[in-house]
Amino acid sequence: MQKIVSAPLRIDLCGGSLDIQPVPTDMAPVHIVSAAIDMRVTGQLYDCIDGNNDGKGLRLEYTLPGDVSTGSGLGSSGCMNLVWLALITGERDPHRLASSVYKMEQATGVVGGVQDQFTAAYGGINLIRMSHDRVWVERLIDPSDSETIKWMTDHMVLLDTNIRRSATGMNDNFIKNYMDGKFYDELTELNELSLLTVKELSPSKTCRMPNLAAIFDREWAIRKILMPSKVDEIDNIISECKTVLMADGYECGAKVNGAAGGGCMLCWVKEARYGNVLVYGINKLVDIATSMGCTRIPLAFDFDGITIEDV
Image (cartoon, rainbow, N blue to C red):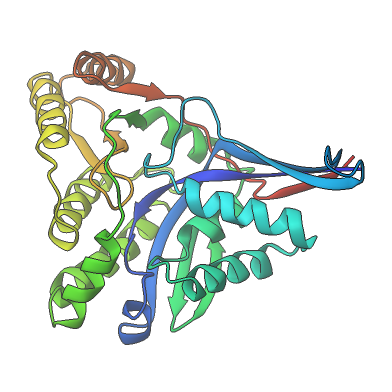
């Protein structure tokens, strides 16, 4: 018998780090906006022959999508843990799975949050609300709302900077500084930005997400305060893209996914003031970023979450 489990990676639209204890206990409730993307971690568990005793054994294999690696900032580690737990326990309830993975990580000394596990478990574009250790997941955009989904994928660009830095210790240092009395104002503003992002994503026929570019920029500025690292290379990419696009009348906002100041960068491009079509600005952004060593990752949202198949 073979079991196959897969779950999606994610982009964090706003609020990452608010879900790392003791922040959600001290500042409850906190809000994180996260979206599952159509890049899935797949795990397989199947019977195999043990060469030592010719008996039955179990073999576990993981597959990451494409060229994605750990350190990409797309939540691959939490997603892999979710897949692993579903494979070995047979649990199928997404909330119980995500909660169990989070508790397991905490018990083993991992300093991290909940958005990777819960986004991988549920799929979709969601508001994750956390109060103390309790987590609620609210879907913000219905998968049948093809118009809003298309609007988002038309304006949003996901780029792999191909810069990898280890996040080891960064969450620990963040919490140490937080416990020393730092970051209250920044975290309060970050929580408010998440709620503004929820409003931006509310479907509207007349005003489509006009402030997401500015929210991305501000979120990235706050993140660099919370978890400082050497990000000159990435800031140079962002600055060059914004400068060239601005000359053609486009506004571009950018933020980096993950805690390590490396990995994937998420951009939002607004229509030009001078009448140039959006696709021209998107293509220009990709050309600039590519010339600086980035790779575009095709962006589509995943609304299925974790899937479990016995074959």
